[in-house]
Every structure is written in structure tokens, then in C-alpha cells.
Image (cartoon, rainbow, N blue to C red; front, side, top):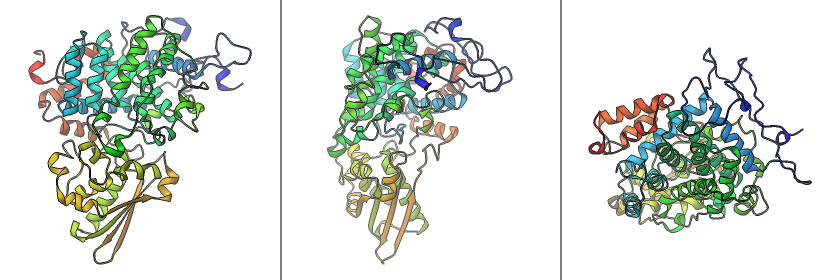
Length: 528
């Protein structure tokens, strides 16, 4: 009997302790119920040892003659509902917490960029009412609008998390949704964590199922796969059952889309590519709650997501090792404010320049070897005219680095984009397909750099795992260090310390609204 023909949630107590509660012994956790890191929904044993819960999907209750298996949407809905009710492994919780820290910092730091201001003005002028907060600005509005603005902020630079294996930016989609809806329903920190984890995992699996074809065909995975994860996070916080969650997924698929022509000619529209799926997911849940239905084969059907967005998609990836392997733990954080394809060659370039004590004038030519997709993705724009173009130009970024300018929050400014030194160096950079990088793609986005000096010497350096990748991760302190650096202009020290204290103990937080109250400019905060 294969996995998909077994019943949902057979509980495994591999550590020798009984799970906290049985599936049939109580109703699903609703948004108004309170949980904590111990007691109901706990994920620790009385002796502090973590329990292991094995997820086994449910057999469909109504079977046709030729269909004896649950659809992928139903299986993912059951899985999400289970971990929201029973908890997530501690390693996953730690990873999700890092992603939340990184994303909150970016939302605050990028809230006043031109495209962020455009999104904020749109939301403000729309005039919707609600209890969800637009970060930094403090506007209270409908969760759909708050999530849209905050997601634009969170992807306002190319500095947010990404997953090389599945090629998407999940944090800037799911975390704004979870925070906005959690604030609306007055959820706890534990519920925020679990809904975020479930939404991330579902979005990542949807993206993985169409990777790498989705990007190769010109579709951007956040607006393509994001609606599914957003619907899961919002639906869980609204107390949807597995059946209701599956319908939310079935509706969310009709919102999937997104084009990556910006990698060829620039523009700022990419900044809302994480915002578009937030509204899609929240809206799908709202419609499902009002009785609208969709095709449960939305993911794995003949005209479903996988077959439409990939030439050689993998339906199996949607549920493979579901509950025992979390793709969340394959997500990387960014040490540099540019496309992840640039990070490995950037570090290789820096290493050679430092080790050989070279100056820009010493360099005759730079050859960057990437995967075929990477070479197109960041090797097309040589002379960018806007920040997004710069963040997708390995030539220009190495030109900046040659003169000591590493991509940070304020990089690719008008002054830098006009710097003739950077453009002259960019003309010396050649981008090509590297066989090793191509063979390792998409699981790894490494690269190789070859420097040829004016006196005829050649130096070569390969970096497979740049800083922030799962194989070379940033520590918790490094993530908080990034948070502190990028939020200097948005927060004062006391405010940042309160946020760190609250996020550090998020499972004990009784109301997410207490956290949201800190995530605005100082003048708007309630007195403590």
C-alpha cells in the first residue's frame, strides 16, 4: 500500500512519548483559541525531548471508479491543518523565526523607497477599513491591503530570502499575509509561527513542482506559486478545516501568474511580485468562506498548475516526504542586496582581489561562469539604468565591488548607477555557462570567476555555497545584525530591543497585535 492510500495522521511516537492529543479527540484549532509552546498543540515532551509526528495523507472519502487517491490540494490542506494544530519541529521553528526577523527588518527598512511609497499610497487612497497594520507608516486597513503594502516593502530590494532549490522568494509573500491576518483575528505568536510555517512549506512545494521550468519559461515563481501558500496561511488563521483549505487552494490557483521580462530590461514592477499573491491568497480564502468552489485538481490536474507552468513538472514533489522533510530548511538568507545568482561569483571575486592584492587597474578581464539560466538571468544587463537592473547585472555589481562597494540596502543609487568607473569595469566582465554550475543547478547556484591581469596572470576561484545559503547559513546573531543595520533609520535602539525580545519568545506571545504595535515609526507607538 503506497503512502497516498493510507489514512491521515497516523501518529508516530519515535521518541517514546505520546503526542499531545489525538486527531479525533477534539475539533480543529480555531483562530480565536489560544495556544502556547506547552500544553495544547505542544511540540515538546515532558522531558524536553521533541516528539516526531509522521504525516500520512488521507484517502479520499468519495472515490470514483478510476480515482482512489486524494488530490495534491487535499493532501497539502490536511498536512497544513495538522501542523497548525499539533506544532512544528523545533528546527523548523528556528528557521521560520529567522525568516520572520529578516522579513520584518526589510519591511521596515524598505518602507519608504519610491516603489514602496507607490504601494503605500495606493493602499491608503483605497480607503479600506480594518485592523491590520501597514508597517512603519502605522496605517490600519484591511488585511488584504496591509499584506500588499508590507509584501512590497519586504521585496523592496533584492535582499530578502530565496530558495535556490525551488527558485522563489517565499518569506515576502507568506509572512506579510500571516502577520496581517493574525492581527485581524488577534492570533497568538504560536499561531503566527505555525501558519507561517505551513504557508511557506506549501508555497515552496508548489514552486519546487515547476522548477526550473517556470523561470525558464518566463514566469516568476512568487506570483505563480505564492497564492497557494498565502491561502494556506490565511485559511488556517481563519480556522478553516482541511476541506475548506482545499477549496481555498482550488480557488487560489486561478490567480497564478507573473512574468520576468524585468530581468531583460528592468523596471520596478518586480517589487510587487510578492505582493500580488498575498491579495490572491487572502481573497481566495474569503471567497471560499462565502461558498465559492474550485477544482480540487488545481495543482495536479491535466490543466492544473504543474502542467501549465512547467514543461517537465513534477507532481510528486508536491507531497514527497511531506511532514518528514521541510523545504523551509532549504531557504537561504541574503548577505548582499542583489540576485542570488550574483552572490557566489561576488564572493569568489572578492576573495581573489584580496588574496592577490589586486586593484581595478590590475584587471584586464573577468570571466564569470554560471548555470545557463543564471548567465541569462544576471548576465543580460551590462549597463543598468535603474536599481533593479543593477541588482540583476553581475557585470555592474562586480564593477562596484572592484571599487569596494558591496551591495547593501542603499546600493544601486542614482550616483552609483552614473559612476563611469563601474560601467567601464562592467565592460571587462564576460559571462558564460559553466559546466559544473550547470550540472549542479537548480539545487545549487554556485559560480566560478577567472581573473586575467594586465601582466598576463590568471587566477581562478569557485564558490559553490555563498554566505546565507543552507550549506553556509547565517547565524541567528548574523540575522539580527542585518536587522539592526538596515533598520537604523526606521527604529531607535530601545524599539529594536523590544522587537528582538518579543520575536525571540514568539511562542509565548499572547497577541500578535502587541508585536505589530512596535513595528511602526516611534511617533506612532502607544506609550509603554
